[in-house]
Image (cartoon, rainbow, N blue to C red; front, side, top):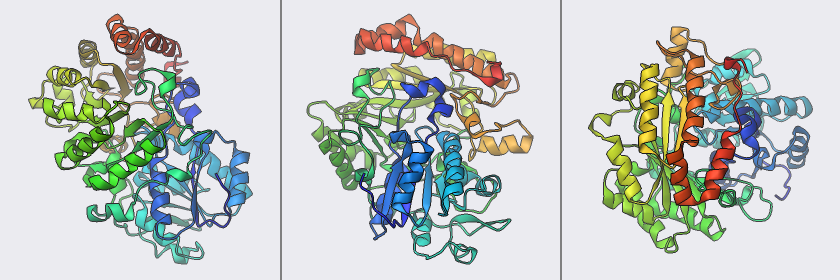
Amino acid sequence: MSLEKNLDCLFLVSNSSSKTYQSLSKTYSAVEPPTWALLLAQSTRSIGFKVKILDANAENLTEKEILDKVKNFLPKMICLIVYGQNVNAGTTNMSGAINISEYLKKNIDIPISIIGSHVQALPIDTLKKEKSIDFVFTNEGVYALRNILKINDFSSKNLSKIKGIAYRDKDKIIMNEPESIVPNEKMDIDLPGYAWDLLPYKKKPLDLYRAPMWHAEYDFEKRTPYASLQTSLGCQFGCNFCMINILNRNDKDEVGVASNYSKMRFWSTDFIIKEFDKLIEMGVRTIRIVDEMFLLNPKYYIPLCEKLAERNKDDSLRIWSYSRIDTVKRPEILKLVRRAGIKWLALGIESGDKSVRLEVDKGKFEDVDVTKVIQKVHDADINVMANYIYGLPGDTKETVQKTFDLSLELCTAGWNTYGAMALPGSFLYKKALDDGVKLPSSYEGYSFHSYDTLPLPTEKLSAKEVITLRDEAFDKYHNHKPFLSLITKKFGAKAAENIVEMTKIKLKRKIKGD
């Protein structure tokens, strides 16, 4: 990465992986390209601003190394981009962001801001707690960032004129009027792609990033180079446990609730296929489509899949995307998806108990036979990463067991279970606050894998019981003989060996007395 002084903005991605994933961070957890740093860098430089991305996570930089690079760049402002590969990561990654912001604040006099889901949900609370942060952006920040880069200094007088931010004026926290998000018709123009060239690499582009183990068919060699991109933003649904729509925020409430801002926006098919072409030209074949609801709107995903299929004649693409369980029922669509190189679908099954699923507003499950849907996906030669949640409202030991039994029956090549978490920005978080439920005392406490993790209790299950059941189920599933036989058959004996080795790493949990 070339050094360039007097930047308008340095987009900084911090490192929280060791606290977030414990020992899994060394080998097994993914290293995700910073999607929003790439989008915002391209957006701002497209209108003439000088920007760079410093991905301290990918480069595994020390605080001193980060400081030295910042001094070389001399940016007018630093913008920490705090999202991540999972929905909870916007909060869990705050730990690393605050650590580096405090360190930088002691050594340089440059305004520091944050764009990310946690500050979108809790802008005032963040500024009250974190004195090293000068201002935060209250939604995706595209237009607010452009406007703030136009001002010559960051005095309270100037900040008061910028919509879509919250800032500190001496001892007072001020939240300005909301700023608009990019409208659908301007997505190609105001969010014009990804600044891939600003990412660090060792020998070839994107080789510092690595896919999740399952995405790479449990083969270390297939994990890199790795990229992720979005074809749409947001989601039209409002699940109680999810905070993905917090980036659409358009109010001044002290605590934002994502389900109030349900909305989807799309880039054009021709625009998105050009981004795929760039990645393919750079030699990237392992790609994640980040959209929460990729297979929802046929108007967008069918033409894109058709274009990807044209580029996947040799079947070398290894793509995964999310989908709802009730939008993947048509065999002809699944065949097209597979031809496009989408070899994995991550499906939110959540619970094996229908009443528990409906309780969290996932919706439309009553008309779906989960087993038949999974079979159709498997028949199309597509692997399933099945996602489950333990500790949803209404969960008991019996319903959790029912969920685990369903997962054994489905026997998918990917299995993932979380303890239900009151993520800042979700309805569950606001309800937990209102009900006086104990919440994590640290940012990493919101990580599903961290030592400090603290999932929600239910009427019948304590938080300790929820995480204990989750950890036990992880080991049981990944050592389940039918599952390992499936992996051996599909991906080879070495893949199965890698899984067994992974299960030998035991996550320590404070709540369990470890």
